Length: 201
Image (cartoon, rainbow, N blue to C red; front, side, top):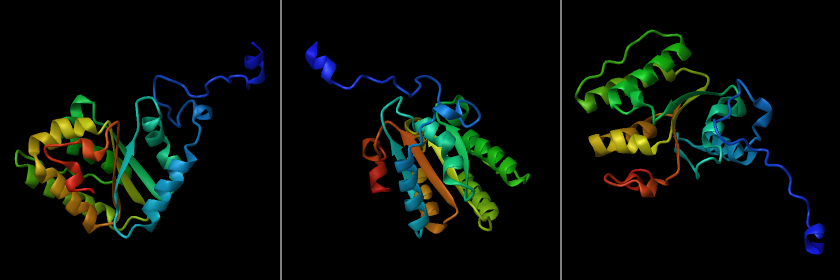
């Protein structure tokens, strides 16, 4: 009892478990993650080519909440397209592209449909062409964030193989307006067949 009295009292946990936080509500509960935002900003602003970004951590540490707040935290130089990869509508490549298409049309004020079909490479070329056309003159960068990205690996990358990773890497290296951000529990080296770390060391 004497030892317990000498210790600092335990303070209540300020973090909320359950649903991710959003700037639209519960704003006072989000506690910054300033060091993560500063590191992200530094990587993005100092990279000649846009990197592939990974936010990795255990469940309930605030990865989704951070994505929800990124646009607010990074400032006017960024716009975020957030994708929940556990959603059934994002588990097929063409429907995923269509969802990104709708989000970007609304964000950019355009009305253009990305033509997709059963040929994954043709669909990717159409997706890449749309991104290049509508983002190269923007005065801000677009972050496409894949939350729970292990589901992207399981349902899309494993199905279509190395073509997806090769195309993703090539696009990242060829432009500096669109950033791909992946968030989940696993590191890139944990994702195999195909191996992510062969494409994104």
